[in-house]
Image (cartoon, rainbow, N blue to C red; front, side):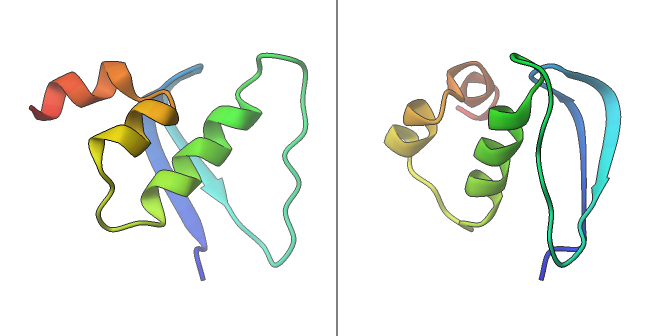
Length: 68
């Protein structure tokens, strides 16, 4: 079970960020506050290998250029 997630400069989140997960979690906030971005990040890290097409579908085009 994922207990903690640390990330830096991901979409609307500037600097170093950390989320601590409990048994039940809710993501809520204003429009464009980053809720969907966090869910997409969780989807990507759940797969050890993800192909380029799936990354593009999730909106990671700008991040993929760093790994070519």
